[in-house]
Image (cartoon, rainbow, N blue to C red; front, side, top):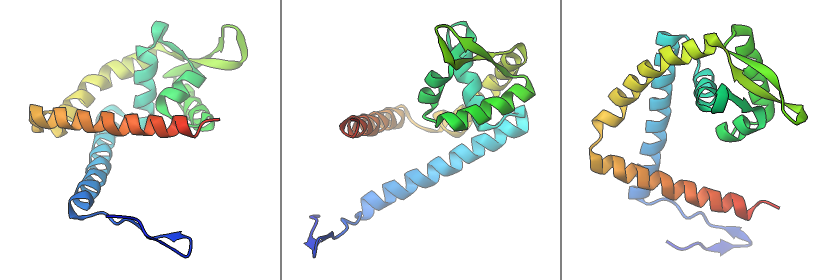
Length: 166
């Protein structure tokens, strides 16, 4: 399909049936799968998806401590969103804030003992749910294809982002 320009306005290049099926299927699958896993995480572990993502990232960081700006980048979150989420998690006692070495403006997010206990309890249950609803129902060829698709899209978006940076 080609793009036609009328009076300076581009005519949309509509998706064909195959493209539309793939796009809508991906969107529906992502929405339903993430929602299902998030509800299960809340029900079984008492954690929100955001809390789980932060606990995973901090628990995997050296010394179970990570600079807030690095965590923000890793999660692709705005700093204000991360700051509000960290404040809620501090109230629950799962993470704390500590001064950054060499940077008085930033802070490190530090996993507490309660946070470590929470992620150690939640991770196996969440992994079991991910296996049940995703990994175990796909064939090795489907997993390979999906991995290839994810890499292709991620690479494209990384190039797009690099092209738009000053």
